[in-house]
Length: 225
Image 1 (cartoon, one colour):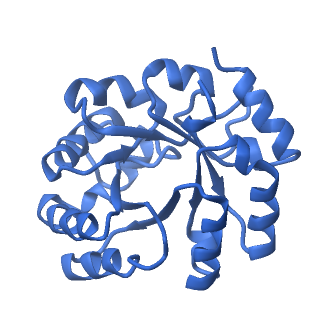
Image 2: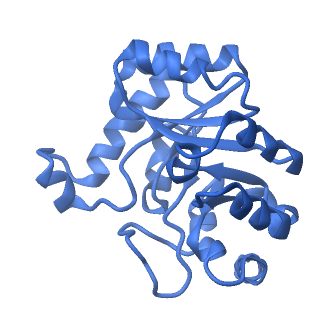
Image 3: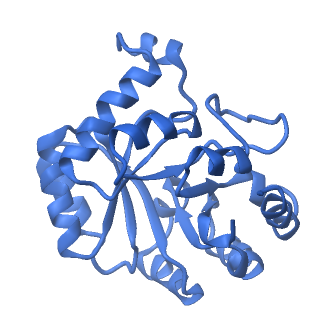
């Protein structure tokens, strides 16, 4: 295991915060994930500035809308120098196929969000879903496979099941927690466990960014067999 398997989730608001963080750890990671906290407050020019670290950039917008808006949102990423973007698999097969075609035309890899790692069975039930998390993920993964997306966002707990159904889909896994701290996550594993399950890429935020990022990522890398 080397740093090529870790994207840091930069859940910050200011350009100074993200630049300071990446100056510290960019040599120890393989990619940069920017999420809603950052992208809703920063300009296209500021997003493009992150390219100076020469790492792939993962635009975690989790797009979920009608087909036309979904596709136009994907197209709008063309000049941001980003390499990956997320869409909810609940957009459905037809919309995802068209969105994936638009993404491929701008050399963008689409990752489909299955069920958020902060959700458990009871959360799905409260939202009116009759399926357990595992069954819902399985249903959504089949859609991702048919839409020919590059990969999926999933909890480490579902990796083996996904690889059996769709071995070509890359599994990008948040919900990585070290020690006994889960924060607001429910379906978690530590970094070593997730790699053993078959994760293609770990997405790690607070376990790296909270406290001393340089020391934290060093300890995470040392924990992996």
